[in-house]
Every structure is written in structure tokens, then in C-alpha cells.
Length: 187
Image 1 (spheres, rainbow, N blue to C red):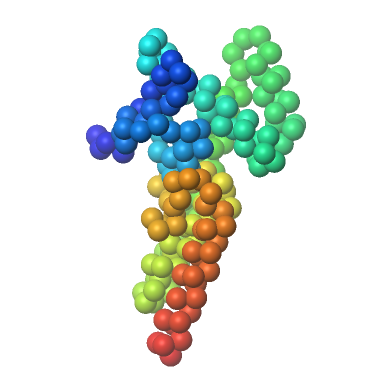
Image 2: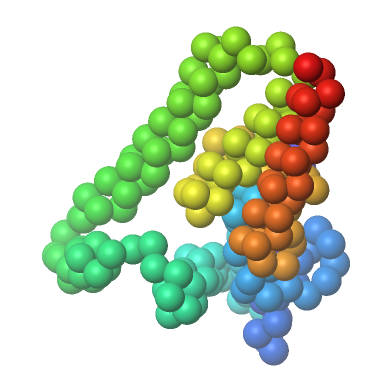
């Protein structure tokens, strides 16, 4: 199994600082969110007790993004989630949510595969650059949900600090201008 397939181990020290065991440095919640957007799986454990704290921290990341106005979950969905926690017995909500996200990722992947298969431009010079831009655009539009299905922005577009909104757009504009320039030279 490749190293990238295993969850990245993050250790929480007694001081509540989070330590990335892969890079041997301390990370913030935003750093962890960026890793997840890039498609990495993480596991956060308490160094002293060995307790798995991953769920707690993932919920905290979501809550921080929601509180900054980056709303992804409608209020009705949040209410339903709270209700599902209050319902006695086993809830089907976790299985439903997992299946829904898997269908979304599969649908995105199938759509991109079909677009690429039917596209007569696939042999055109510069197509790979345009395809990378499409992937970056789809990632930006879906909030990175496609990361688990193998989609990722081109390496030069990724930003470990998590502030990829404006910089991604600038990079895409630059790449588009370069592609247009190459196309005009081909004519």
C-alpha cells in the first residue's frame, strides 16, 4: 500500500497543538482542511490516550467554515442532522450521507470520463493544460468534493495555506491566456 493511501497521522499533544507526523511540523485546522481538499485522508489521535479525535476535529473544521459564511449545509439539513442524533435506535442518516457523497464523486468522475472520451479535441496541442484547468474549475465549484475520486488541481495551483480561491482563478486566467496564445500561433 502506498504511503499516500494511508491516512496521514496527526498527533494532538497535551497543549492541544497538532503535529503532522509526515512533515514533522505543527499544523493548524486550516492546514488539515487544505490536506483534505487535496484528497488526503487524515487521522487525528491524542498522543497521551491514543483516542481517535478525527471526527471531533472534522466537525470543528466544518463549524469554522460555516461560521465564516462559507455555508455548504442548508439550515434544513443541519436541523435534520440534529434530529438524527436525537432519534432513538440506529439512524440511516450516516449511511445515506455516505452513499450520497459516493454517488456525487462517481457522477463527477463519469462526467469527466465521458467528456474526455467524446471530445475530438483530445489530440489538440495544449489539451492537457485545458483539461487541468477544467479539473481545477470543477474542484473549485464543488468545494473539493471530488478529491477522493482522484481529481485534483494542477500542482502549481494548489495552495497549502488554503487560500486558493483568488490565486486559483488568477492561475487559471494565466493558463487560459497562454493556451489562447498557443492556439493563435497554430493558426
